[in-house]
Image (tube, rainbow, N blue to C red; front, side):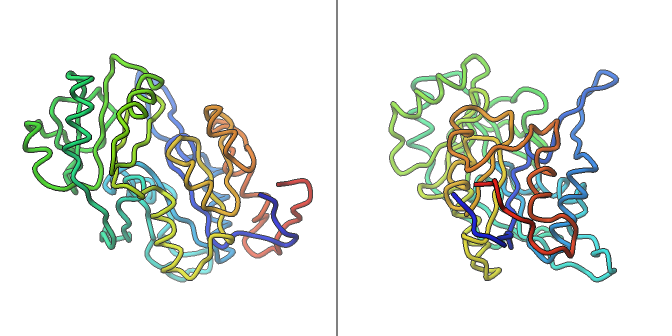
Length: 295
């Protein structure tokens, strides 16, 4: 989508994994890292008076540490306290404020029909639902590093006994393409789904996505969708791109995501977020930069 002369976003929505957060290996371990360039660029957005909203498939307890790493809730450069953050979690099913963590909006659904249909096709698949503030209840342990917090092994019937905001289905023996075909073939009536980079399927209430979560936040902040910029790299960012005035894909995104974006920036390892934000926020108090040549 083209942007008018002088346009600059009042709300910047940022995906986490593969967008602002990269994985760095060293000394036999892998750690999460946000580059200084990205952190500085995000703080220029805040200094200019715009809002930064994290929007992720992660559950709330897996997002607060990223807000801490970015120092989103620290005093601004003039020493004044910033407002509590608005954060979109669980692919839009949960909206919370931080700090402290306070869930202010949540969408739930009965996941049993969809999960049972999937397990009929993939009987050894792993299933997880969030256990707020602790981690996840799972039917069996997920591979190391894939879920944040503790894993509490629970029978499927108990996992699905109550409505939930999100369900994760994972099959380490399958591929992402197989899961795309699986979800499309089943139909999953009344349920939204998103397939990740691997054989990872997120189930959510119908109509719920990062876009619906951001729309809730934008209304609370008095910001219109045509005043928003969204940056991401996954299939769960497609609705967010459609909703925002400008949707930008990270350079390493898959072709479907690249094709849906208004523009493409560098990869997460090239600090693509910093490159995109520099177009609109050269410093905290500058006038909007020229949009000539960008669409």
